[in-house]
Amino acid sequence: MADEFDFTIDQSSTSVSAAATNTLTATLTGVDTAISNDHITFGNGNGDFVELDEHTVNITVDQAASGSTPSNSLTLTIQNLALGEMSGNTIKFGNGLGDFVSAAADFSNNKITFGNGDGDYVSVTDGTSTNNQIIFGNGNNDAVTLPSGAGGDIIITGTGNSDTVQVGTHTSPDTFGFALGTGATALSQTTVTGAQAADKIAVGNTSGLVLTAAGGLGNTLVQDGAIAGLNTVNDFINFLVSHGGLTKGDTYTADSGGNTFIVTDTSNGHVGGVEIVGVYESNSITGHILTLG
Image 1 (tube, one colour):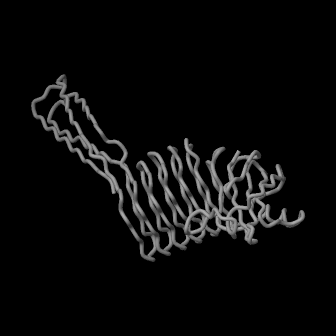
Image 2 (tube, one colour; image 1 turned 180 degrees about the vertical axis):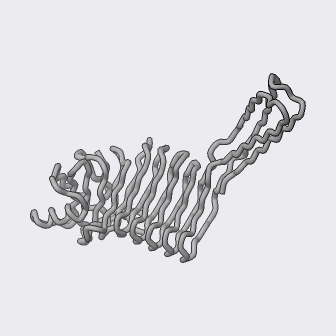
Image 3 (cartoon, one colour; image 1 turned 120 degrees about the vertical axis):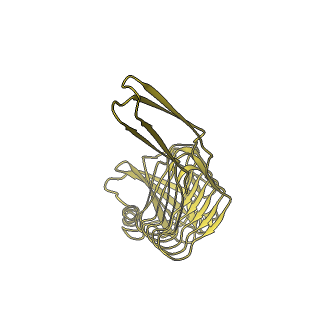
């Protein structure tokens, strides 16, 4: 969905001298577009989408003249063509492949739930991002890309292979939830880019964040510092297993190659983790939520 405005300015002359100057002026006043407060549910077909594009203005100047051609200047004034808004929507994907939400707009207070198809994504290329909740399914190669903004977004990933999250700079902490079971294999990997100090890490599932002792992040923090050679969450799990094993109720962090790896063993014995781009060695845990520091 987008506004598209077309201008065609036609000028014909049979008697204008070469020295003549004609000024053509057009003024365009736009109306902002929005997709707001809708409930949208996809079926299981591939490539279902919701999309809000930027305004497009096309200008064509046609001039026909016999004899000499006058000098022309064109002034186009564009007013109030601010980005649109996608806000307050609830969007649920089916299990098809490559479903997506795309917006070149301010993006706020949306709740988006992926299905289990591969290649689902949310991509917001302009505007700002504020207070959205996005929950992945267990498909592979799912992705979220959000711009800078006030933040406060909650993004919960699944156990699919090679899932990625990228966020812009934000003034309020974002929260990244990872699914237990992530890191069970080398391919079962989630990587978050754009996280900042004070952002939050927790366990999550399709119902939201898990903040209970039974299935939440272990509240005892073990910070292992720098460990060479870690490339995946699975690498860190294997390192822990080979160095005394994991303890129920503990959460472990380590940094390697400029990234931070976080792995938890919940009090009921389920393991999972996430990779955060950047080095964070002063973390803390309260109430089954880790705060990056």
